Each structure stands twice: as structure tokens, then as C-alpha cells.
Length: 174
Image 1 (cartoon, rainbow, N blue to C red):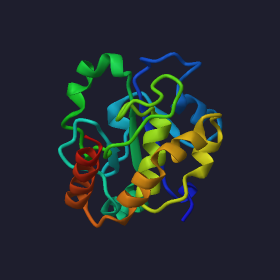
Image 2: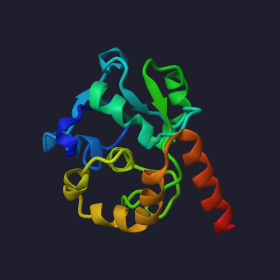
Image 3: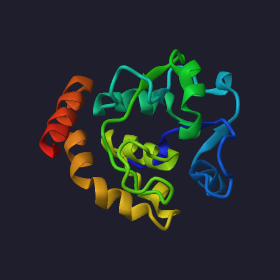
Image 4: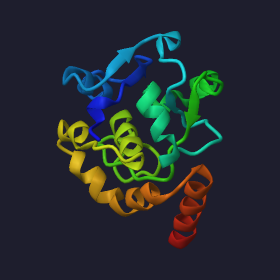
């Protein structure tokens, strides 16, 4: 299934350089809907939230199809401001261990830009996400760096299994 069938919304906190912002670039290509108020987020959607206690998994696919997918575009430099986002309404999920390929955080684990987070979620849930990455020069590098992890996560059944797979990978790397 193509990601176009999925409603993708980004909460944009206006904390980043607009020239480097991946979510604004996705908006310019009409691939996402941007909102600036939390109350404008679609109710019941899957929210990619790094503070969530529950991992994103393929089990979230049906909710994404029905309610949509939300990403939070906030600067890592202002992570402390994100504490207010812990209790967002919706299905809050954190992404599993992945490596950033964006120019700002290249090679850094878990420091994904908004576009990378959306692509990872869509890929893990079984949607096609190539169009989102195609608008970035570094887009294919994200898949190259994370292909094995993404394929493994895509085979998981639920959040618990994602956490176990992530733990196995981190232990293997030690």
C-alpha cells in the first residue's frame, strides 16, 4: 500500500532552520500536512513520540490506516521542551533503534529527522515510503544504513517483539 493512502500530519514547533527542515520540504512537495497547534492533531492517530513507553511496531498499521500518522518536529536541542508531549492524546509510540542519515546528525543513533522518522514508521508498518525519501539527496543513505534493521522490525508482531529485537541488536554491537 502506498503512503499516499495514509494521512500524515506533522506538528511543527518552529524550532529549526527552515532551510534545513525536512518536514517543511515534505510539505513543499505536498507529502505531509503541517500543523502548529497540538489540538489540530488528528484524534486517535499514531504519534511518533520519543518519550513514549511503547515501541512502534507493525501492529500499528491498522490504526495508521484508519486515523493517520503524526510526527513531532522539534529540535533535539530543545528536547527538554518536549516533556509536555509525553501525555499526548492518541497512540504514542517511540521508534526503535535506527541510525540517522540526514546531514545534521549523520551516523548518530536515534537522532532521526522528521522525514526519517516518518519513513521508518511507514516502512515498519508495511507501507511504501520511497517517495518521502526521494525528495532528499541523502534519502537513499537512510535505507542503506538501516535496511537490515528496518526489515527485521517489519517482521515483528508487536511492540514487545520490537523491543526484544532492538535489545538483541544493541547487545550484538557491544
